[in-house]
Length: 296
Image (cartoon, rainbow, N blue to C red; front, side):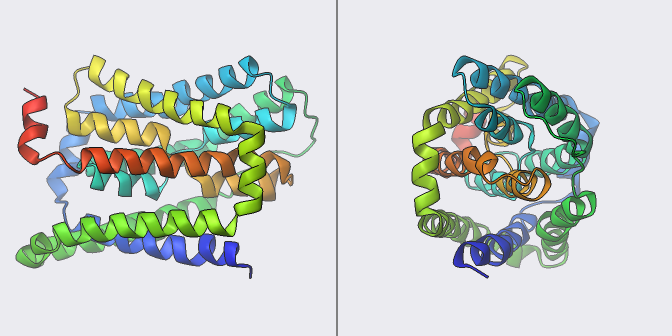
């Protein structure tokens, strides 16, 4: 196993699972029931993730006249749901964690249908001929959601339920630890893929940065237009711009069996960490009182 594989297959999932455990200790069941009782935020988030994001990706591929392989690679990114990293960034940004987790889970399940449909259209439009049926690893996708997200968060919520003072006492520590782990993961991913990232930035650096910025901007704008509170708007912004890079790589490398198609994902991953880090730095400085004041 190479260093890059060790980071992506062992260190990153383990780190995210630990972070999700800490995140669960900040949640109670009513955080989730409230979301589904008033589902406007969920519907806006899913509309951004499943419809607007692919439309933005497709538009950029056409405007920049990308090569067929790069265009399909960009579309893979645009059709992928958010991943556990989006939940981490939302937590540090003091967004609505329950909404972020719910959107990640729902979009991941729905993407089992949406990704094959949208990618089949993209492959046909951009002129890549393939007889291969695009079938996502349903079992692996669900297992990833369960092991990295649902189970650790559930354990954290149980700790919050039965050891409330302990859980509340760790909240600040876990937020700091999450930030440190995020920085370490970024450094390790960058170092392990240095040569590939340099090539990716040269070929699709600008268009992937635009995809990242535009999707987050549209996410925030749509949330505010529909009068969602700031915490929910932060969650939708992050979910719109932080994609599941692991799933994108699996589709490019394992399903479509083309390393070149995975190049946009490498470039996007770097921008994703940078813009996510900036959001974490800016939003984590805000106090709870400021967040409430913004929603008055």
